[in-house]
Image (cartoon, rainbow, N blue to C red; front, side):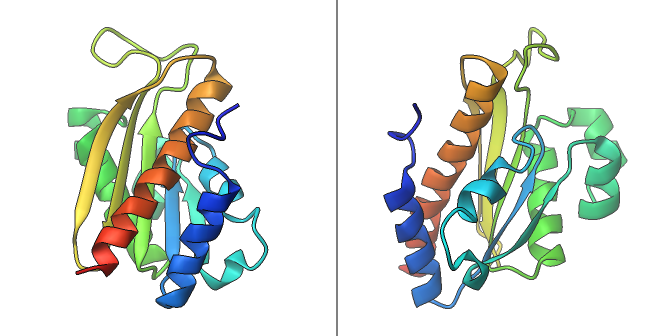
Length: 168
């Protein structure tokens, strides 16, 4: 259903790009619950380019495992650019990777509010050179649909981010 967002051929391209440049990737996931890691590891040989990931679903784990400050979580909420920035910093260091994805959002059907409705997902990327991109997306559909859209969008965007980073 979401193959047009990011498909197996795109994953092969991502892995080949990372492998060619001897680079690795990691992920910190909240609302996607490990789906990004699952999609990356569907392709044989992914251990060459994927160091590991963390599902930091709770704020406690975001703090303990990724060093996201409780102050940041309290002030901006888990679904924010600020928290995703800190998730990126934490996960790229934790897994000693060259590139990282971080995702935090409200997959639904509950949890949304007027300022952050269900389907709001913040996705970010970084590299070891401190280049970062963080964007807020608004997906529609069921919980599963929001999760798949978020995971596949993150992979599509990290492929572009990595290409741009390696072209410098």
